[in-house]
Every structure is written in C-alpha cells, then in structure tokens.
Length: 153
Image (tube, rainbow, N blue to C red; front, side, top):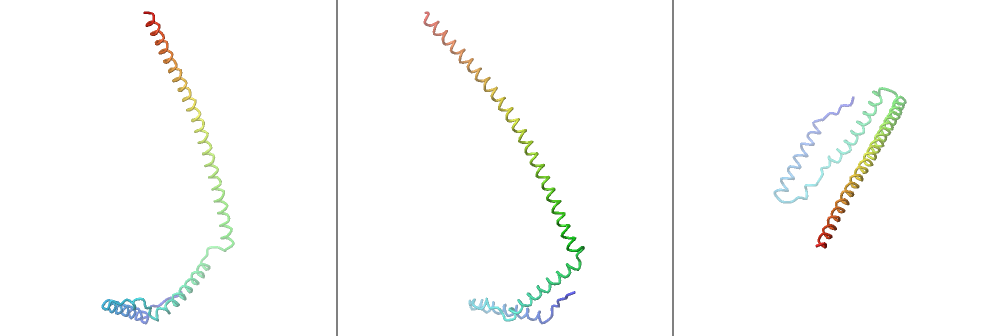
C-alpha cells in the first residue's frame, strides 16, 4: 500500500508561498505595479515533476490492483463480452423487425382509412353536385316559366 505523507516542509513551502504572494499583492496594490504578479517561484517548477511522478505511480498501482482483483481471466471476459454483444445484436434486430412490422401495419391501416375517407368524400361531393344541379335546374325551370308567363301577358 502506498502512503503519501504531507510533511511539514511541504506545508512550510506553501505557507511561505502564500505569504510571498500576499506580500507581492500588497506591494503591487500600494504602488499600482502589476509586473510581479505573474512570477512563479522556483520551488513551484519542481512540484510539477512531483505531481507527474505521483500520477504515474498511482496509475501503476491501480493497474496492478485491477489485475489482481479481476474476477475471471481475460479469455473468459472476452468470450463473455462477445456473447453479450451477440445477444444485444439479436435483441436489437428483433426490436427493429417488430418496429418495422408495426409501422407497416399502421401504414396499411392509414392507407385503408384514407381510401375509405376518400370514397366517403367523393360520394358526399357527388351528392352535393347532384343537389346543386337539381337546384340550378329547378331555378332555370322557374325562370323559364316566369319568362313564359310574362311574355304571355
């Protein structure tokens, strides 16, 4: 087990760093000079290397732990992944086929319903045309009789 100890030297470095930055801030605030604000202390550069080494050691420890605590061999894991992939593919195919069948059925119902509605509308339109022709014919006959009766005077 790896244990990282936060020593007093590290704490003192950070306290010193904070005090140094605070001093710079106050000094710059008083003089309105901002050129020292972006200076990085030298010990900060070595911290990057320490963090990088710590990350490398941590990732190696994690990889070793993963290999030691794996519940089964890699070959078993690969075959299980392959089986699950095939099962997922089959379920997806079945779901797509069911969805396509449902869409075909819905399309057929809509087509049949649309054709039925179109026939109804055609019959209603023909009935309205016949009724309007009858009205026009009746109006024409009434107009013809009116003209004949007025010319007979």
